[in-house]
Length: 364
Image (cartoon, rainbow, N blue to C red):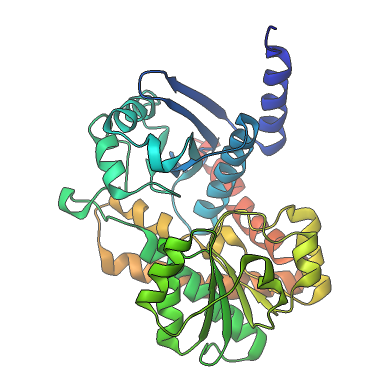
């Protein structure tokens, strides 16, 4: 049976046009087993910088949609953070436990290099600084390489710190005080970012609950932080907590979960936390839940790797990540003033910057 190429192309193009993408690149190498998708959403502000995610997707269609949604989010993330970067993201389809090889990463690096700097890659789910080192053999368009190579290494601590800042801003808005001491926080997903966030919360004196489908990560977190309490994944929304912090994959804030939620704040590191921003943003307002937009609160990692392009200075990066606190309060104020949900308020701020800079570039 011949594949239905016209249907595949129409589906991808329809999604690209609907979400405003400039380019999608499909990369295949049978020798290394590489199957990758690089999505470039918008380069108004600069080259598209975004991580490469390695995931065993259920279908190619799921991988395409993930790449499109993630890259769109990167455009908003860079814009609202004041960075001169566009939005891009890549996904590699496969099992992280078996597919990683030097050949795969170097072949992928050659594909990245073929885009001549329009896309710059970095770490994401299931990828590491060591993987970026292999990619860097074949291209200069990579960030997040190890510190011994002059890079900034793992960006996870900065992502976690930004989430912590946004969480404190939400506490300030909700309770009039940004202290998290005694607050009950559920961290859903305890990979690199989730573990660093857990550390900040415990240091602040919060009561932390954790959950993850990967039991090895749960065990590792328990060994680091003895005071945390483990919760089964199917019971997380039964908890009476103060803050829900999604730090794994997206779309955990959906109709079913919102109806179950007992928390007044959602503030986490995951991308695309709202399954449908047009539906679930307003639902959160109706339920009285304060949501910190994902592309704002998780921008710390992007702020960090962006600094590699400008001459890395860790102290300056920390200062820029701390600005997430003030931006979060600004979005809450706009949300109240315009009577719109917080995700839409954040998008309007980002879109205004994109429009303003596009206008600057269009004039002599």
